Length: 261
Ligand SMILES: [Zn+2]
Image (cartoon, rainbow, N blue to C red):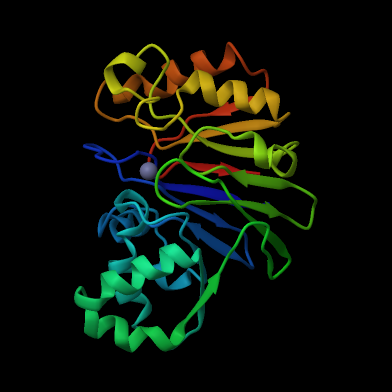
């Protein structure tokens, strides 16, 4: 049994939640997918009763602020322990990290650097962490260079993280038939005109559900969502919309929600 802990469920510019950060963990292994938009990542970890020092693997999908800036606080925590950790990211994202720490938290970074094992991932790169098999893929985005990630677990369960742009044909074959599909949903279809999900290069709940059906996923988990309007009813509204297009399980988390699989 393992958990997905949603530390942040919002897209950019949230007002009531944290931005993207998801911790995948079992009793032997963990991987933090994205690092939210700032120091709130550490708050969220503490709220979830997790010690940031327990994190041993981090994957940064791309260097947009809502996915990466939490690494400043996270790396400062990592500095407190002399332990190696893997940081998976593309060459482009690594350049962004270098430029960030050139001035910000410079002295903390110099001390922690020796323990950060950067693994530069490319399209179709594969790695093992414990018994988990990771595969990365270039989503070939319209905006900032971005990688998606697939995790195959020893019990043959497959998790797919598609990044924050709509589904693209070129990686269709490697991401189909997943047990867990983590898909962005910038707004409901109903609110597309208000939040301009498509214009901003993201998906609506309807788009995410159609992707899940096309990809023959067993369950659809949404992230990168709106929190500006009717947050309380978000789970209900989004689940209802997704169910119109996808018959599998739908999970619409709030920050700190857990999904067991
Ligand atoms: Zn984003």
